[in-house]
Length: 440
Image (cartoon, rainbow, N blue to C red; front, side, top):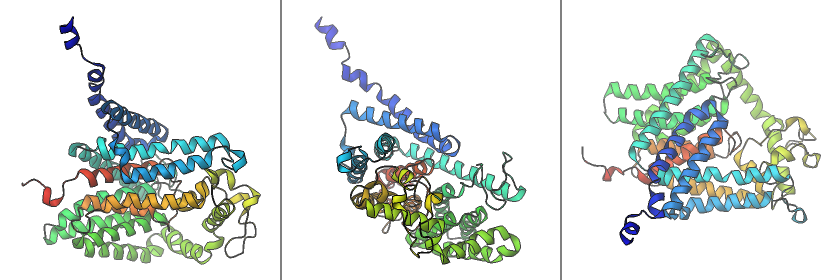
């Protein structure tokens, strides 16, 4: 009897046998997010949830919760907890004005924080897993690029869908939304090979690196979406700042993009009208432009709810409320646009944080952004690894305050940001430093 009990596996041993299954499943779900974010946002949510579950199950089995003590995760919990508190339907304290849907959205936002932690501490710990990640991101970039160029040449993409309004490329999508994901993935895809070519110190390789960077900028000009183009150039400038050998090619890419814009009235009038003419008009009358009206409305909501905001997804519900109608900053639109301007979010992550959690929520969100950027930037000035530079630049352009963006935690762009953020955190934690790299 004692022999039988000695050889019988314990409950802990039985659970431990599931660890390889959990690890492989989590990795598969994370990698699947890349194609799913392109064409199946709903299924992407399922894949994300399974990856989170596998990571939490692993932590429970191994009793390893050390990742919860990571600095950025603690700050993230503070931000998340505050938004949840602001979304609770507690009437005497004027919280949770929009009830269950707002609270559900607030609670669900935790899934993104867990995903980043899972990728950083477990899923992408191995170099092979990170190589798979890089390869699939490259494949997704090529897919969107080829579809966009095909549409530019023939007027419709490979699925038969035309340009939006006859001037904006939609890539593989039916709507003009290829620019934002391309702006994020181009940086970690273009910067490493460009840096590798420049390291050869040969004219042919240098021209090849310049061609890669120029091609990326030209592609974004042809896509004809203003903010993605500006953010792409900004991200490349960050790469040139950190990688000295890339500075001249980056300048060349920016100059070529400027020359293409200058020639656009002759070769692509639609590009000129949208990127130059329409942008100049919007900047001249920005306070009363659609973006100015959205920001006016968000600020008014924040000023009238300075402590708690309206809870998660508050702009969707609060924007149509006449209580928040206020003249635009220039006074040209007395009601700030009324209900007609309303969208699901204010098109800026910091304004969104203000609406969701008041000024304390905005302060916590700013703190969280800095807590994310700090580990991503660690060591890059002294030993800039090109892939890490690309991922750091991607995070900066996503978190840059002077930008128009999608909803911060809405699919698909929320998924792209947190996926790339988790990859960047994993590279920062596990990628060998130049001095630590094994000899060839």
